[in-house]
Image (cartoon, rainbow over all chains, first blue to last red; front, side):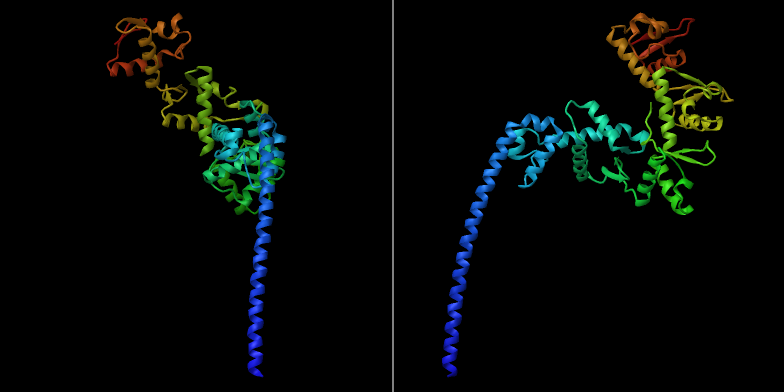
Length: 238
Length: 149
């Protein structure tokens, strides 16, 4: 009895194994069919996108809003035509260097103003300075993308968010949370702030301000009752 | 301190823009350079001296008198002026001939040159640089003359 059961048991296992492998076979077959279908679809989509891109090349280059939408569409299938200078996309569109170009111009503008503002500049100011020197329109989001790409060059370039505004930092060195908060508070005060305006305990505010002064991001003014700190990145020179 | 650097470069760019070559400390105190009326801020004498001393350390400023009332401002070094002048002389084929100081800094032919209007003391310094290199010889006379080689 027990032998019989065992034989049946072995038979059952065998059958199960056969079944499993058949299922697997079918499964792979189905999956590869699916994959094939998908890749055909994807290819069709890519082809359409390419046609579209070639057709609207000029607009992609000139119109920032259009460019944004186009890029979103591309990102959904995993291509980033504006970011790379290699491969089909850039050859076809000639737009691969787009962010590279903005990046270089960003560096130029920032360096030219580093001595005055200590290496921080409002994104808006950078934007308007860039627009003056370029023929093509550049949106704020293009600019942000370009600056983020500059990050790969090292810690020299980054975007800082202080309150509602963005600042571009173009010198090495990390700003701490405290520095960012001070930037934010200084903005509310039109770029001029005193230590008591900040309202922290002595040591904390001293340490933060000393750094900002040393880096030239703020200027000391002892002509008022209390020492004032002026942020050259925040006031405009008429 | 970065703020001091900024002041130094501001003074030099301002003087370059104005094509000025000397500064009277007392006068400068109320000039737009050190007194910004629109924000009601001015530097006091001590602060002006700190900046001018820094410029002196860097070789851009020299005191004209011991009491530090006036100073010479060099936003371009005598050596750099010398090169510009020598280049101009060479281009005009004026080597081996004598010309006056006036021709160089105020003549019709140098109107579009950067050294047009250059102060005499600075011109002399520049020419002395050239003399040292054997490229010029200065004639001491009332008008001042120089021969280039």
